[in-house]
Each structure stands twice: as C-alpha cells, then as structure tokens.
Image 1 (cartoon, helix red, strand yellow):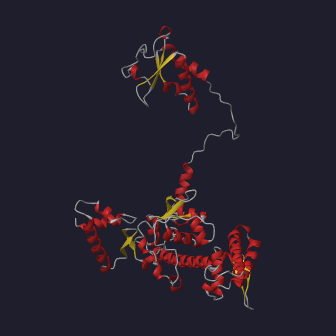
Image 2 (image 1 turned 90 degrees about the vertical axis):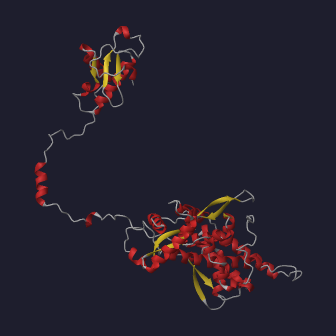
Image 3 (image 1 turned 180 degrees about the vertical axis):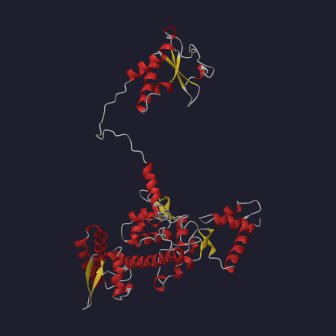
Length: 191
Length: 271
C-alpha cells in the first residue's frame, strides 16, 4: 500500500480531525514527515480531480470535508438538524474567553457589562469552553479556556487563526486596547 | 418586544429596541455611534440623560435585566458630576471619562471579534463531514406504499379463531395459590418415591404463580429439613428428594438416599 492510500483510508473513515501523529499510527512505514507529504499529495489530487470534498486543516489536524459550494445540495436532506449556531451573547462571551484565556467569569462579565454565568454554562455544555484552572485571586475563581471542539466548530487550525488585532478597524487599533495583554499569564483581576 | 423611545437632543426622535441590546455597554455604544459623537470626547451630560431615559423604560418592563443598566447609569452620573466639579489641576487628574472610554473601546473590539467569529462559524458550517447525512433515512409511514391486497386481509380474517367466550367482567381475585397447598403437593408427590422433578410439580398448572409458590414451598421445606434440593448446574433440572427423619440431623452434604438414575448429580455440586 502506498502511504497516501493508507492515509486516505484513515481520514475517510474518520468523522473528526486527526493529527498527523495520530495518522502515522496506522502503519510502521509512516512517520509525521511522510504523513505531511502525503497529505499534500492528497490535497493536490483532490483539487485537480475536482472532488466534491477536500482536505481541510482543522483543530490542529486534518479532516476530509465537503467543499462549501455543495452545501445547498446537502441541505435538501432535511432529515438532520442543521449545525446549530451560537446566540449573540454566547458568541460574545466566547470571543472574550478565546482572546483572554485563561479568564474568570467576573472578568467576562466586566467586559460585557452583563451577567454571563448562563452563557458560559451554555458554552461549557456545547464543549466549546472548559475549566482550565483556578485564579490565584480572592476565592480562587474558576478560569475558562477554549477547547479543541471550539477550533473545529469555527474552522480554525489553531488559536493563531483567530482574527488578529491588527486586522481590526483602525479606530480600535490606534488606542491602547488592553484586550491583548503583552504580559501573558497575568493573574485575573476580579473586579 | 420591548421598545423605548430615545429622546434625541434635537427634533430627531427614534425608537430603541431594548431586546437588541445585550447590555448597557452596547446601548451606550449605540447612543454614541448613532449621534456620531467622538468617543474620545463624549458629551457626557447629553449621553447620560439619554441613557437614563431609556433605562427608565426598561425598568418599567423588565426589572431583571435593569440591574446592569442601572449600574452603568450610576457610573455615568458619577462621571457627569466629576466633569462639573472643578478639578484642582488639569495635568495630574485623569479625565473622568477615561475608564469608561477604555471599556467602551474594549467592548467595541469584542463586538467586532464576535462578528468575525460569527462569520467564521457560518463559513465552517458550509463544510460537512462524514455522518452529516444519516445512513438510512427512515421514510415515514405515510410514504411507504401499502402493498397488502384485500384478499390477504380477508384470508387473515378467516383464519382468526375466536377465543372461548369468557366472562368479560374484569375481576380481581385474591391469590388462591398458597404455600401450604404447595408444600402438601411436594410431600404427597414424594410420598411413594424418593425423588421427583420440580418440573413435574408444575405440569398441571399454567400460571407462573404456581411455579413461584412451589419453589418457595420447596425452599421452606428444605429449610425445615424435610426435603433436599439438588441441581447439577445452572438451568439444569431441579430434583426434590425426601429427607428421612434419621437424616434430619445430618450435614447438608449427605447423599440423597437413592438416585433415581445415573444423571443425578454429585451432591457436592449442590447449589
């Protein structure tokens, strides 16, 4: 068997992203370098042969997904619920957690200006955020961070894929906006 | 839908849909953006009045969500007061609005990121993975064509045997099967021979209760050392033996008096 065939078989059978080291477990002939090279071959092959799917880098792994332009055809099969979207408040809380993680609930609430325990619980239930530790602050409040599921849900390869602060509108960039703190690992202030 | 009339400073009046705003920061940003004022030089008095006006409307509608708005209102009033009071020296003191502006900018940044996350989510939802479509969608009953012919139905109807007529009144009868009765049955069955199969004792009866009561009676007699119960293994036939009076004091591992045939298990396999 050729490496790219083995890898294709593994990815084909998977319904979640697989990292290259996970794929390499399929056979002794594979290591991460071989896997990465073969994945590139596969991707090119899918593109050139006009497959309806392609190889997507997702959540620090790879997954075979249908191309976006085919979604109208798939949606005609309304026997399954559409992938549900998050509500506005949930997205907002998630955005804060994604950029400020690890972060406590009180700080999320301070930034949003409204209570957020409900939406944080929703995000936890959906597997998008999880408790990653406790703050050193008073009462040692829980700190939240995003999960691999979060990356999958939004199609990000890693947290690096999040919109960059410098990509945001100029009016916000000109000013000192402490949302991207320089010193990481700073203790969470409970206000 | 809750709405609040927003008093504009000029003749312009518009209606604010309170449900649209997730919190006081969003409302404040809306007021600032709507009137095109400089966020770094907020006309705090005007904005505060407008904010309070809207909050009054919310209070009337929804006390629950009013809390965070009231908190912001208090902050605005405080800033307004600080602005009016003469400051000792312009250089040393920070503009009272600075912290509010910082929060507003931070919040606006979050709003922008939230929008982008929403777009990323929508874009990702356009790609589907394996398992998106169910393997075999089950058609509903109405969609399945009925292939049964009337003749088949008729034939089936003719095949039906009516049950014996029975008393249609539903009657709850007290349990008529007693343990005493079953104990007697066991002992009389053992009367002539030395062993009997448990199954035999149930043969004349069909209801489960007879099996249960016979078994209980068997256990009770065994406890009273009147009989021995033997089974060679799980689900094997259960044998009942009479236990002679002189055996009564013997240990339970004593052989049963006589084996009816060679398949009778080793008494040490007693269960």
